[in-house]
Amino acid sequence: MKTIISILLAWLVASGSVALAQEGNNHPGVVPLDEGGRLLDRIVAVAEEDVIMQSELRERIQTIQRQLAARDGQTPPVDALVRPVLDRLVLERLQLQEARRIGIRIDDISLNNAIENIARENGMSLAQFRDRLVADGIDFRAFREQIRDEMAIAQLHRRQVDSRIQVSEQEIDDLIASESGAIDRDVEYRLLHLLVSLPEGATPEQISETRERAERIREEAAEGADFTELALRESEGQQALEGGDLGWRNASQVPTLFSRHVVLMREGDVSEVIRSPSGFHIVKLADRRAGSRSQVQQTRVRHILISPSEVVSDREARDRIRSLRNRIRDGADFAELAQAHSDDRGSALRGGDLGWTDPGDMVPQFEQVMNRTEPGTLSEPFRTQFGWHILKVEDRRSHDSSRELMRSQAREIIRNRKRDDELEIWLRRLRDESYVELRLEDVATRDAGANQRSR
Image (cartoon, rainbow, N blue to C red; front, side, top):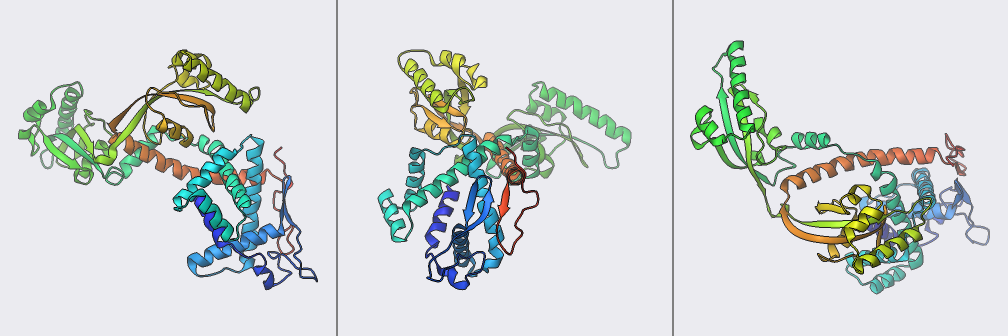
């Protein structure tokens, strides 16, 4: 919603239609006036099959100048904004064309819901919000279309960019380990510890023998031997008489030597043998707990997906999912229909079962429907970027997801880092493979690499 709200703010700070025209009629970022004082207009750029008019460029420059003045107290000169603003307009047009080409359409229901959300976040009803826009001189229809365009571009990014981003479990492990104490700051660990010590100035032979002994003890612990008994019998650490129990410690209290191991372990796991100047350590994670924010509501859900394709139109996909819903409502088995018809073949093999899901696991449209569907009930058909769905909520529970949330947080951090790079690459490729012609007198009229067509 931040992107949509930023558009709203841009509209609210933009006012007046000819203010910049007073700066000089010949400037490429200004709409010139004829002898009668009437606004003239002309094409300043061609982006594939679309054109950008000078009035559009001038309007956007004015909006950005006002935004920057409100934020920083300074208004940059028009000269500095002409080229970057025109480049942004060109890129927006290319993205909207690409969205239309692959079938992205923002229907009026989705658009109305988005605008109602904007109104609600600004503490107004929809009617009050519309009146506010009109009072500020903003055309409500034009505003609606601006929001529709922004939603289409956001959906295009999800489909063309986000779907390409892969995050491996090793990347998650590496990030958690490197940021231990920050990413798991709300987690507490109960640790059991065992030390096989080395004498000061130990010889290579002593080090080798001690390591072998530690490895044997570690193997016993990993195979299920009672760690407390092992610590009482074998450990030379300070807590040996307590069975090696270090008690509950938050992330900042876990010894640095162990933290990179502990943060990646599951309850009951035994660490590898860890070397330090004092000897060889073995740690067992007895338990893990976190604050109330790690108590999350999980949902057990099944779904059926029908995806539009070259042979199945969007309307046909919607009609098929409606038909399947009617059959389930009339008594057909959800799991059997999912196995036979769902285009999500991974879950179809399990009767549409997606298992227990955490907040954020599903795309927003899916999660919104799932959250408002009561256990044991069937949703209405709904659409996501993948196609048309129906879902059935099997159950809900409150679950301590401290470890899962930590990994989810790490995954999101990595995805966001990768997303910026992937989006930049994708946008550059889209621009390079498209026909773009600039028609400004004081800038290059052709982009390097223009006149190349991707289609």
